[in-house]
Image (tube, rainbow, N blue to C red; front, side, top):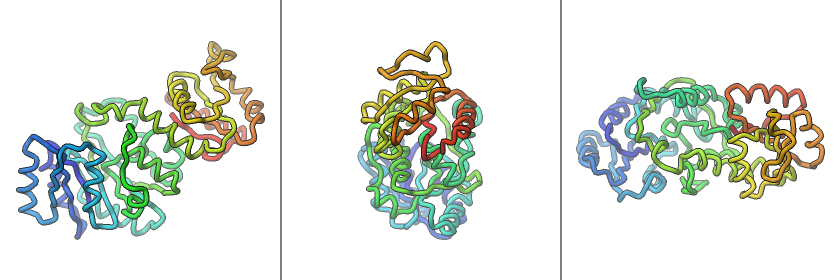
Length: 331
């Protein structure tokens, strides 16, 4: 059932999996051309436990490795985990039960805990706080364009959904966020088991820190790509709240994707009345009149300041604007 990439702490990770309470499962362990003795350890452990099926490939990269593992997985439910994270004994069983009880859910995550404690910095803590606060399908869908709302190593997916979308794809941005956004646009619903079932290892050599695909710029590219194919499709006027760094960078990619960007909203008096990307920067008070200029407008909120999203949400609710229909948070 689970597919894994082997890394230096493989034995500890495998131990956490061999002690799962789920009666039946299989582990496809994908070794993507390791040079640290991982393959020998996998072969030794597979001789000890028949549930482990090692698979050696020739350093093809994360996306191809994931798809290679998926190709040999046989179960209707697929879990994916890195070889340096730790699974709670109830991890797989709890998610199987959840998906059996909620047939409308395409993928189930769980709460996650970062470790070791000394390596978990403030930025990662804030991300985990946000991530663990999104449990219901509605909450996850509402904030899916802010950041990746699911920790990839914590997710169990229905195989039929993966096959329907053709597995993982490499477009130069995070492959997991790409998958969540594609699933979302196809109507898939996500949820989380409200328990900490995965310990997510933080270290300086994680791909999210070393591979350019996981840069802020490439996250913005992914957002713009799927915003234009989803919420912004056939919208004749797009208003972007936020003329700061995030808004400037996102607007560049939105324009490249063909979005009908009409104006920016900002509260900074130094920006109001000026133009950005040849579009006017207006104060919040002018949003209603600008909105009425279009037949099918949309608003994106790209303000990353902590606490700002909630204040803007309140203001937009007062204007009668519906989140997920009229506007979306994207930062």
